[in-house]
Amino acid sequence: MHPLTRPYLRRLRNEIDVRTLIAEVLNMEHRHSGGHFRFLCPLCREFNTAVNPKTNLGRCFCCSRNFNPIDLVILVKDYDFLQAVTFLEPLLPENVQKRRQAATLFDFANLFKADT
Ligand SMILES: [Zn+2]
Image 1 (cartoon, rainbow, N blue to C red):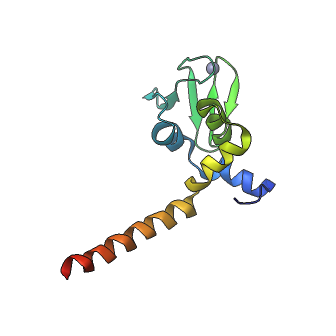
Image 2: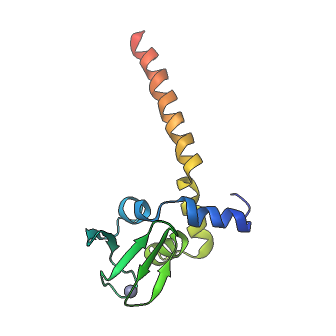
Image 3: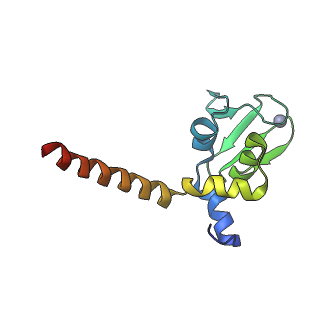
């Protein structure tokens, strides 16, 4: 695992799109309304929420709380901090990219196999 330096934790909070995390990774209930991406607050179960793409934070207006990607994983998966960091690591853009390249190489190799 990557050493848990401050800059690294900042990257986990900032570079993993919180909307993608909510909608596609954690499969949290979400909807678009009033021009905002809203999600079901994991604390109060209300939809009175919004996501700020600039800060990459979700906010619940009922709880008056902000959630960064690490907070959300902890709450939704019931993980501790370290588990949440481990969970988020493969979602960093360069790791997603690496997996995509690996998948492409795999397909490429299979293409040749199919020919013989
Ligand atoms: Zn709430």
